[in-house]
Image (tube, rainbow, N blue to C red; front, side, top):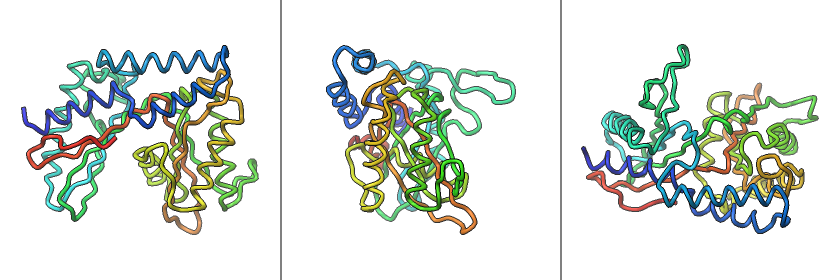
Length: 292
């Protein structure tokens, strides 16, 4: 077993069993904000206890350990083929160890071979840069929250949403309203304004690599992110749809160029079990440091 494989297995274990600090702090703050004795408070207490137990026992936070998405930032000349082979082996071994549940099935037959490896699983995105560092981030995205993602084409007459930021705001909030807690809220939104249908969704998921407390460097998008969270939390949907003050923990919005004929707004939804972690990898495959 290579050092890189060891590192990837540990990355998978920790991502599956431990909520990153920024998400945990958001949940703790939400628990303090909810009215005492309400169903919303009870739901958040159960979530908080679930987080504690999963970390103590090093077991998956959720029975749906989700789609396995790697983001690799690597130097020019990095051997992507070897990395992908190693990652697939690491996923199979992590599944055998119980860090990942056996929940990847053949889309035509429904057959589950128990490995979590197959076409599109794991999903690996490489990005080369000119620095010498290699970092690997992992997102485990559950099916329930994936089901309530949405993509809108502007203008949208029904929502009176034009091709402007107000129109974007309207459709993003509509996505939250339509979810109604079904994505295991409180949730976090990743949004892409622009792109095409495929790249828009992909770019929206990249927003999950941002930490919840960070602020968008674009003042207009920063204002929109804060407004989306504030407005969504005033809708009364609350944790798991039980009502309350905490519908969203955060919203992260990016922009991609588009064709003049198209104006898509792609909304990806992440559940409270926000499994995202990352590592900086040394040349020999060892973990230099954790990113979250």
